[in-house]
Amino acid sequence: MQQKAAHSNRWHLRDVILITITSIFMGIIFFVTGFLYNGLTLALTPLGMAPFANDILLGLWTMAGPLAAFMLQKVGAATIGELLASAVEAIIGGQWGPSTLISGFVQGFGSELGFTFTLYRRYDMASLSLSVLTTAIVTFAWDLVRSGYAAYHPWMIVALFITRFISMWVFGALLVSAVTKLLDRSHLLDRRHA
Amino acid sequence: MNPTILLILVLFVGVEISFTSVIWANVIIIAISVLIMLWHRAPILSYVRLLLVPLIPAVGIWFSIRYFSTAQSVHFAWVMATRIYAYAFLGGLFTFSTTTEKTLASLEQNAHIPSTFVYGMLGAFNFVPKIRSEVKIIRASAQMRGINLHFWSPQLLFKAIVAALNWSENLAEAMTSHGFTENAPRTHRTVIRIPWWNYLLSVVSLVGLQLLLLSGLQ
Image (cartoon, rainbow over all chains, first blue to last red; front, side, top):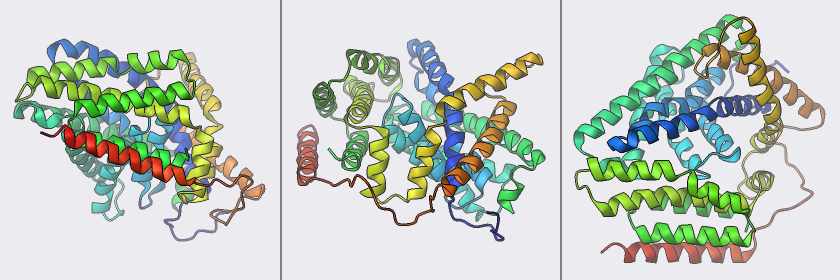
């Protein structure tokens, strides 16, 4: 089974299963996020600040991409990881149905760009932060259209972007790097990256 | 309708209403979705759920557009609120028209998604109940040591990933030993075809949507 000498970019059955199971785990762990999101939206609605609920929590939903990239270190891992996670969310009953797939693809593509810029050579805090930045920019451009962000006052647009970047950095860089440090210490991924 | 064609249609409509602001188009999409759900005899509770779940975000975005958008347009506030409902009902339409297994099978045969992905996902979905209990076990065992693992704890995610690593190795080897070969050509017991009227219906729906969107432009 372990005859791959060079680190290959091919997707094997166990990679697909690993990412899907991890996504289901995250889906179930983040099922709470749905309630959190609704509660936060409810609290912010009288202030007219409801979109902030999305941007405060968005980092959680975009974690699958960087985590998959770190675990598999393959070209396309971030995109496919986030897309699979969104498919899992859509299938186990997320509230947005197939449109989750569109968001998942946009988010995955965003975080993929960060790793593309490092030519898939660096997997550390720097590349995670870069990936967070590209995810924030790409998803924000999409939300300017989809969620009508472009209609807001400039100060609100800037505030939303900063909120989103901080959220994505806390979850997508800080938390993911904490998890991957634990994984590195366990040496469980060594065989896969060999 | 063939799940692949339906998925492409639903995604296309979803992307298109994201770029346009025609309230009527959103409302008609919701109405058509309800009709299709009625035809598939969706349970009453699913309509209640589809009405209630997007309520909070829809009301939330309505108020923020009214308060903090540069134009403070009532029209755009309604566009956003109905758009959120249109997404939710498009989801309902798709969910009640097909099943996960049929969709994945059709994606393999009609959209030619590599079989490794299709069967990998199908296999992994069987772990859903096990994953639920694993999350409970991880949290309970931490609590026994006086540690409370929140959903943002790296420890919780790490332990989940360790379980995922073990299971994925085992399942992949089990599937391989039962004769699954990655991306090898397969024969199918049920061959999924795309009937001609699927194409016709998709084209008619899309033309209808364009007319609707154009009429709302002026």
